Image (cartoon, rainbow, N blue to C red; front, side, top):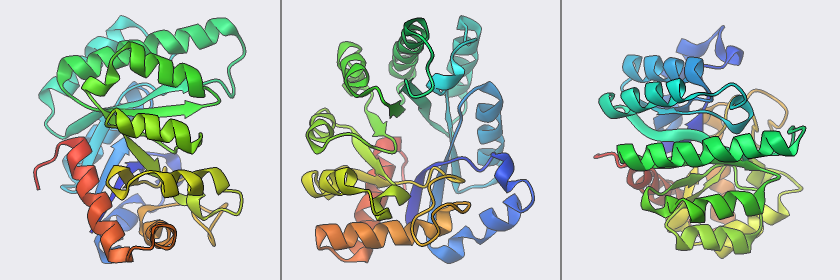
Length: 259
């Protein structure tokens, strides 16, 4: 069954039918979901979902765009729950996002909390889930400087070059591939999937965002991941069943889950 390594089922887009969708995922061959926090409230929501549903795991942390008011008190909260909650499987989503950043000072603040959360992941023995937008080189530099290969993790919604993807793979990171792979303008991501081994790819939705074709622009959910697996199978020349088997195994490995 498929492992959706990156979802946001706490999002208000699911407020009207969350339980119905989650309860029906197994019928779409979805076996596990990692629900991702972007700040303290959403991290708490992820924990609640993980406690309610056996097949959901929680990832807790601060998205770079949410770090403006972040403090060491938040680090203390993350440390406590990452240490004591057995269904917390990673720190994330953390990283850099310069797309909406308005100043160099804001970029520096994101860099500080990215490094700080990498340190937290290493302290708690968890992998990281990395968000990076318009910040390719700085993201790679911080991961190297902070020796994030020690904890490993996923480069979520990968959007950079195939060459840089190979550098991440060489450090032991996995590349998150979702609905974008089905888009007409997905050339760079297709080149990345061609260039890296299947053993370094995990499936993700980022739902409710980034629904694959032919559902682009609509609300996404994990039931659409077979479309992503099908596209990867075409690129790799491997059966869909094999894509699902290997990417699910990869998800277990990166999140250190015993089957």
